[in-house]
Image 1 (tube, rainbow, N blue to C red):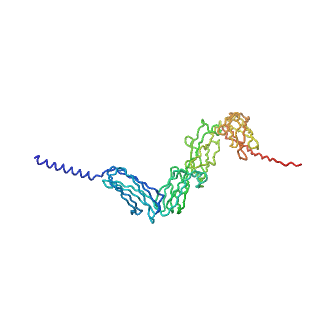
Image 2 (image 1 turned 90 degrees about the horizontal axis):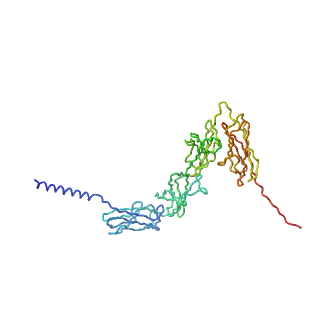
Image 3 (image 1 turned 90 degrees about the vertical axis):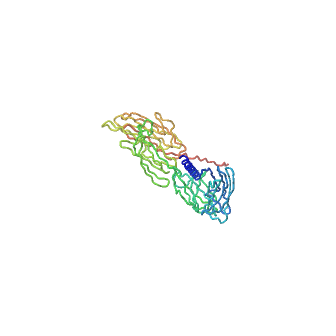
Length: 474
């Protein structure tokens, strides 16, 4: 019985081995051949028929037995216009080579393809291709990219250029390529096909165009066409609303903030577009109007019921530039303290005195007097004076503190019928050009909205001294 079964078993095993061998023979083989291929010039630059040449460099890496490689060029219709075969039997890896091609006179303009193909003992292993352009008429194209600081869509004097900005180019034959500005914010491309080009800027994150991001330009034969692109980086306007408990217009660390306060923004961008918006302060008293285009804006606070403002309720002429926000637009509010039921609010008068006119560069004194006209004591009386930019303090006034250009006298309680006078000595800045300076003093107290007194002072310039001389007679 065994002699009958054993031959049949051996026959089945033989068929299985043959089947496995056939599968291995049909399985794809893995080879590590690769080709790097480059050319010069590269699009968008082109070569002209009869001039050229287009230069090619390539490297072939492999781990099989080399036989040959081919180099060929085809036109835009796929027709071969140049071919060369190089035998390299048994040559070691890597194989490097160069080739060049000058299109004959009359070669049609368009996009051409160069290819390198590597053949080894296993057949065709790898192919690499590159494209290049041929044009019978050439010119130059210059692209300029600038940061449109004021957002008006024009390239103004002093506005910086932007390096490393990329563009997508479409040449007159409809072929595309890319170009990038250099360190000077420009890129000049010589030997490009003459005719109409379409240029699209590739927008970078955080930038917005102030003009068309896609433009066309004609490149003249043997001449130069050019395009200019401007962009901006939108920026925020922000600030804080706080409880100015002592009404000195200075935010102090001990003072609380005011959440859920409404702010209104109006303005005009550099392109003339009107902007309006509203927001509210967050839990930290902060607010922000983000992503504003360059322009001039006004932000105003809505004073909540039962409160008064210790600072101006609007900040006009807030300028936003490209990438430059406008912070610290802060507003102070005074939480009015309720009087004892039935008690009247205090009546405090303030009078500020100073000269009507002075010479530029002169030093003079302001006198500020507050008087409690009430029949009861006024509490937490505070005098403040924001020194204008055209004046400077000669010294810190007696009994006062100075912070951020604001002079503060904390008077405390002021009895009925009593007055208090403080003085402040200032100097007119010699380099100022203002004709009149206005200085305002303010008084606040518990239950009293701010009251103010302003002194205008004319600033005169010294007349030039004219010296005359005459001849001696006799």
